[in-house]
Image (cartoon, rainbow, N blue to C red):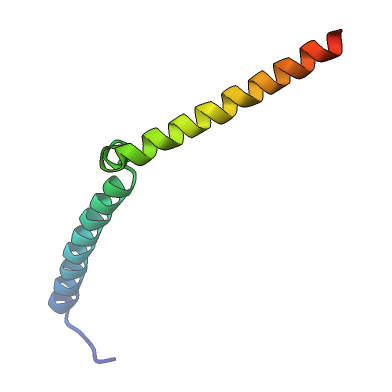
Length: 75
């Protein structure tokens, strides 16, 4: 590795710093996009509603079944 002057080292550090800043901003944008659950729900509204309805049906049916078992045992 050839010897570099202090000015060249400073210039390299500044270039790396600028590159890192761009990479961090890009990463922030990607993280914000991936964690935007409201946007995901807006884009997939129908699927989310169907999933919520199925989950409600399953939970409601499970509670009704447990209630039926509890009342049957009490007799």
